[in-house]
Length: 216
Image (cartoon, rainbow, N blue to C red; front, side):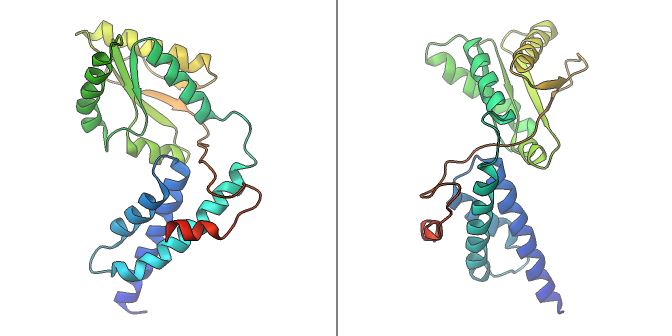
């Protein structure tokens, strides 16, 4: 195998893993997943035109596999519990965001824009909780989540109050948490990542090749 062939094979393998992970994550649209996987894999001179049909085939195959697996999930998954917990926290004035920003540093800065926008809509805001995109990737692969948190009011006690409220609501919705009580430590959430995707043009039990037409 030549160095060029190995480079291409490595790019294809990496691209497939990226597509699998982002389909399971459940946030990005299908066409965006395909495009992003090609962009990430096409490094060091790998030809994107050669990767495109392979990426579309992977997306089709992995999405159908996801739908088959999804059809066997319980009615209520841990991701459903997380959604419900975040909805309740929003009602309590804690702005919650999922798969938010590329990393913790960016998320901790950008969440203040989210809080301002929420307050501008006439809602009470006293704090925030979020996990970022790298956290999502970890959760998909079985590593659980870690939530950043904070308060609009200055000081450690205000932030710790938000953290305790977040933990209380998560626990009430059946999610296990791990936190040492320190201000500089994020809240760990143990969960089995199963985020549902809307089924595209066919039922979970009857996959159709029509999906391929949608992503080409």
